Image (tube, rainbow, N blue to C red; front, side, top):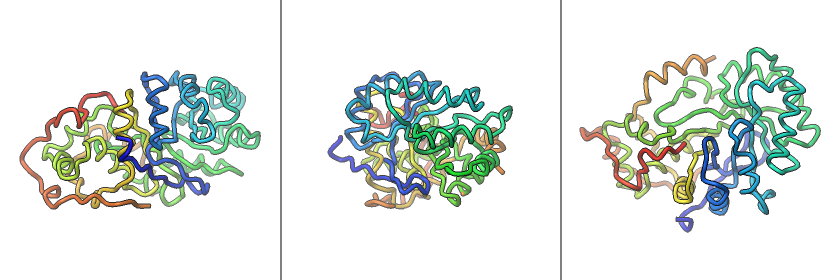
Length: 316
């Protein structure tokens, strides 16, 4: 599969740096270093972890001999956002990762009990010390993100890592537009909705399956590419095997010719409403043609096309 992969890159905020648009997520990851290294070899030179995942040491093993090529991101937990706690957490992550600096250090969740100014001050201190290159956040709604941006003095927030997929488009209620308008990259986690079956369940008309049959791309690849069609959005799907990671990587290097053809795929309404208030307050490649049939709603429920679709494989 690697011969068909041409990994595209997207700008990281307004840093001037470009990163792989398909990275490697490691939440609940148990595949070991080898699949990650194959992902790096396929061009996914971007790996994301966190102090709470328990995977930093495994990532350390995966990046041996490749550190200069891999964009390394990790996160500090919400309970460690006091100034001294955050500095200590960063040092511990550096030790577990076996590196001298972290490329992207992210606040994992907002903590309303701790002033954001204190947290951002510590993050900027880490940048000044050369321990961190760029500052990011995760799971921040629009008002929280705006407050965090205002709290920085020298080093801007370059990314916000949030859930985004065909079944959960909550960030389209304003957060996505805010990020796009302010040069903040959206790092979409769970682009496959953890279980691909959740996306399939949101598509009773079988639109995604028809696109898959027409283009020769898997359902997972179409779901990831749908995210990548959005300006300023990169993804970090999880794969626990070489097969799944290479399949995810092959979602790059091409574009759905009309991603709006997936508009009839309905988000999971209850989850969408539940998450909406928390998020409320903004380069192309060769196109893959999707025929008109994909824009017509059929009567057939999307079923599992088998191994290629990867239904129920616990992927993020």
